[in-house]
Length: 328
Image (cartoon, rainbow, N blue to C red; front, side, top):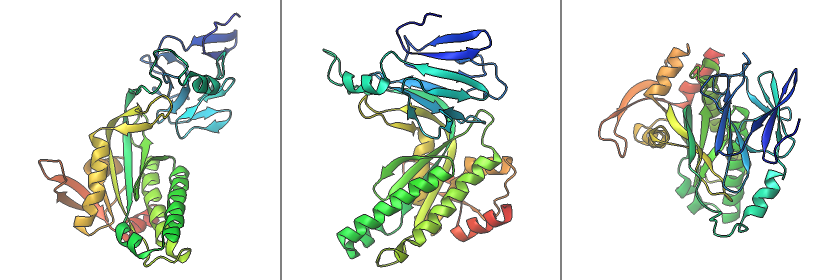
């Protein structure tokens, strides 16, 4: 079989390889549903399973879209957007495809920067897919006070350790750090077309609990003036998920009111005097998934930028840990 010179996916079938061209577009969706660019009739594949996206410098990314059974590259499950290289083996369900590019995409990306006459290699790429997500925002309490009372080197080492461990914990529970913002981190969980399931929602709460425990123990390793605490906001809803960065600095993130509300909900814990606040949709998703989060009380809060009071369900980490102990 003669393949074209452009990048493509080779789909392995009983009658030989089938070429799926990756030329002439910016992104291609993969799934069982008829609305995908590449429809794969595999019952282990989600209706909207994954997406391949090419930035303006020729670098290809593979993004899992919250698939039930996962997306794999060379046998390893994808939890964050990852760059494809020539020859990578992609697995969706029980279907295998191989990514081919005449020039390795990483090399092409480097060569493309500044090499195309008249082309702005830093042009912003705005390619998104609307997804149901849950956003978690975690913020260190009394961060400014701590910086005033801590030696710069101790402060730097302690916060660096906190960020590193936060990333490891969030990865352990199926997400990645979408943003490091000052003394806060933001993580995103992408839900599949079936919606937010029980295991997925509980995983998010377990991540928050583990982050709180890790933070409270940091003063045992570093001479901090007081034990650190965190506050957390969780919100669930639809958002546009994709790359908002430039060709040389791609930035995969989620955009929309769902994300903004998560930050506002985290801030509301300070006025409520509590540790964790969930949006009403998050709480409803927990209930629909069969999770009875009785420890969380209903409040109406005034969030910055919103005309009306917003409903939240909030509680302490003690409430959260009691719920998780009963759930397990």
